Length: 363
Image 1 (tube, rainbow, N blue to C red):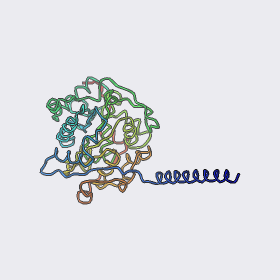
Image 2 (image 1 turned 90 degrees about the horizontal axis):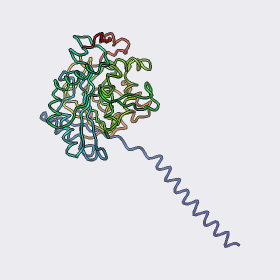
Image 3 (image 1 turned 45 degrees about the horizontal axis):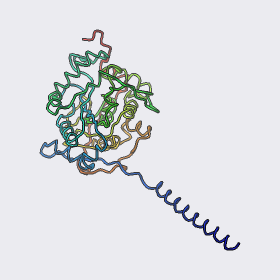
Image 4 (image 1 turned 180 degrees about the vertical axis):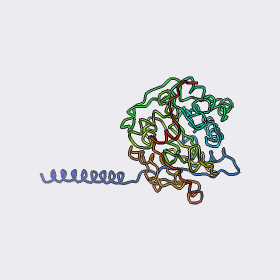
């Protein structure tokens, strides 16, 4: 009987030991810090943008690592209007497209521009419209004027007008403005969306970077050109009419890479009326919020100054602070420049400043 009890006690002791060990491992695992988001910052040497783009991607682990398991990729530049200098340098897009094609990826370029003279803009006035024919012609004009039509032919990759065509509805669980959003069907068929914005200040959002660039994914046929109808709805949630809806759209898409065109940036009254700034940088990261936080820091902005970041954190997106990000490449203090701030308007007043009104006759 005594031996039997000894066996029971021994078995219990082993159980207790292994149980304690497993509990300890669980505690260690829970206490272990999350792997920091990685963002690369690279100087453009001798105006060689393709080399800087490749180095920025290499610092993230290389194109094979960044696109692992992603066969179909869309590059989303910021082509707000057919104006060079306020739009994504096509050399950045070309470099990314070539890298992705070298990794045997299927690549497309997609955009839904805001406005173009003679279509939905006249002088300083911008008009809202859902007219598919007008938006189709406008987007073709923007692609052509900025050299993207030629680039698409040269690289043999399609250009997608995100304003028009077959659409799909995507749920946004816990959406701030939208329970579901309508987007171009092609965006649901890709494996990775790569945002390639220009580093700029913005009169509504403070800055326009990788996440804010997804405003161009709201199709004009659904949300009006200049996204005025989207802004109207979003302004009921927060005054900028932008930040919360941007986070909704980010969550509705497969945004997994941001490559920031900071070759020439913009300060002051962006996104189109500011002053060009020669930054000479490429910033890249697979965590969109982290990449934007680093980019904003390089412009002299703290995270709490940018409404989009606050709404992203509210949605559960990380990180919240610069200290939580691993920066590779250039030291931030060596390449940081304090940008002139924009005058911030709520959407309710900027719609009057921009002269946004319905087109009476879609021309």
